[in-house]
Amino acid sequence: MRYISTRGAAPVLGFEETLLTGLARDGGLYVPESWPTFTSDEVRGLAGLSYPELAARVMLPFLGDAIDPDEFRGLVADTYATFDHAAVTPLVQLDHQLWLMELFHGPTLAFKDVALQLLGRLFDLLLARRNHRITVVGATSGDTGSAAIEACRDRSHLDIFMLHPLDRTSAIQRRQMTTVLADNVYNIAIQGTFDDCQDLVKAMFGDPDFRDRLHVSAVNSINWARIMAQIVYYVGAAVTLGAPERAVAFTVPTGNFGNIYAAYGARAMGIPIERLVVGSNSNDILTRFFRSGVMATAPVTPTLSPSMDIQISSNFERLLFDLYQRDSLALADVMRRFRASGSYSVAPNQLETAGALFAAYRADNDQTQAAIAETWRRTGQLIDPHTAVGLHAARMARSEGVVPDAVPMVTLACAHPAKFPDAVTAATGVHPALPERLADLATRPERLTVLPNDLGTVQAFILRHARLGEAQPRGNA
Ligand SMILES: *Cc1c(COP(=O)(O)O)cnc(C)c1O
Image (cartoon, helix red, strand yellow):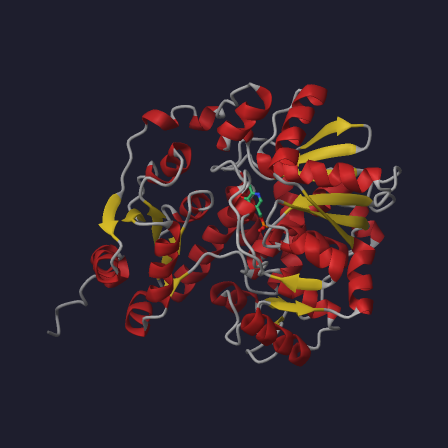
């Protein structure tokens, strides 16, 4: 299996290098040179498998000979044992033709665990094999940092330093990070804003001495292996609801286009998927694109679904590559224009191709609250605001006939309601309880280091604590 960059000017890599590299050297994203596909009989054969076995069957074709299949099966079993539902990503029926797929049964109660729990283990395995270490450095406004921390904790070949803005995250979000007391996890509370944290991280990546000495790396949403791990649950849901005989539709609350691109991947592998519906919050760059063919950034507005408060959908480049018939020169040119001007548009025939599969709807805060309230009233299910954006979009797509009545619709439930208790309580009057594994979160001991918004101080702290920052062996001094 070989991976190529969407921009065509980076080396073609195997799975192992693709995983460890992340972003391609030419600024592009890696995609498979060609998609592995399942025959109808093979899809039928996936019915009834356990999640780990399904995951191994779906992902093994992407690995080439990078990892021994039995070793990979062991790693996958270990990964999904951290989830506290036996089905890992269970389907819950809400309505005659509407299901929720719960992706929040992992350690941090959000869908990112599905991929990141695997990614941390894959990194560790491949780094150990090369006797190599990395230092993961990241910034978080609170909602996604914990998934990266849980993915990296206790891994022998990496250390993680996560910056968050002091006193500007919710208590739950902070505690999900700071109560991880593993030796290789460092939470740094910066006396500043989230933007300050991001600027510090950018500056550290831009400092060649620091970067090379510590092998600084990111766990970001463009890594190919994250997409690969997310394809699994789309395949699983489709097979449960009748693939290969019956097609299904998915609605995905998304900002970065990562999760829904994985659904596109499942379809490319031969799973019958009739429609993919994007749910946007008020930061609706994707919905505007699917309506107009114009991708244009706008200022970010804070919403009730903060994990989608972004205005650049990095993973969209992977779809755009296909809309340009995999012409990497043309794609690189579009991305250059986008960088320079903040917008680009596609041709009518490209928009038509995209529109044949994708639809998109936006939910503002009021519509998000209404979807939480209505779902509670009609089904007795508490849903988080991201899921609510998805359900709003799913109902719109159904009522406009974009998804025919005969097609089962699955909406992705991307976070546990207890992760966003204020929005859920405001909409329903019910306070969502944390699941048992986190019930004592509020009383667990925390560990964090408060540092000023100063690059030199933060770098000195990381150099002092990262295993790669330790003084060189003294023998030859
Ligand atoms: C990250 C996240 C999303 C958005 O995922 P994309 O990568 O933008 O597709 C949605 N909901 C929750 C809860 C998240 O954590």
